[in-house]
Amino acid sequence: MKKFVIVILMAMATVGMTFAATTGNLGVNATIDPVLSVALADTALTFSALTGTGDKTSTTTNLTIISNYRHWSVTIASQNASTDKGTLKDTATVEPAASLPYKLSATLVNTGWANAGNITNGISSFTSLATDKSIAVNSASNGKTPVSGAVYTLQAQVTLPSGTTEMYETGKTFSDTIMITIVNNA
Image 1 (cartoon, rainbow, N blue to C red):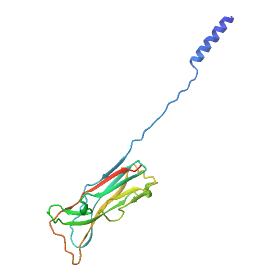
Image 2 (tube, rainbow, N blue to C red):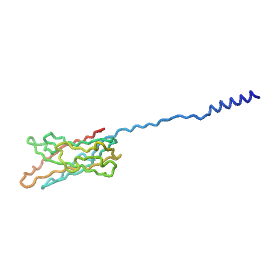
Image 3 (tube, rainbow, N blue to C red):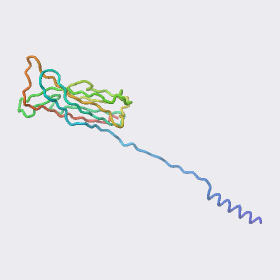
Image 4 (cartoon, rainbow, N blue to C red):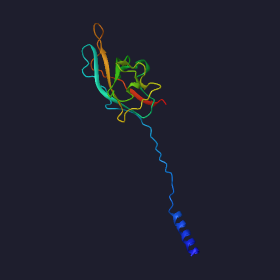
């Protein structure tokens, strides 16, 4: 009987060890993909009926900046030749080509996002693009945008001559291309 009890105890120990609780570890990892982009709602700003004198404004378009980087900057640059930056050029006229100085502004639309106060806007009011301008995150701040982006309304302005200043010639088309570039400043 002793042997029987020992065999039963051994069998129970073996079965107990087989179903004994064990633990394991499961790691959970995630990688966030970088997001850094600019998009324009329209590809041109247009002036209609440039007549009269004084300041005239163009149509508007929205610039959407999307970034999950803390530090970024957007550069806005006139692509005309260095002496003509910030001007609309009459490209059809052979020298001397006429030019029409203009200014650009970028107004933040969605001001309620958490990091809006961390952004420096170099063209918050109408500003010449004779030199490159930027919209950038302040150096020590967090500039991550909402998922839908930080939206700025872009608009151009020209000032037509007044008084004894000669008027611009009719039938001419003036243009410039503005390059908008975003970079990570990490």
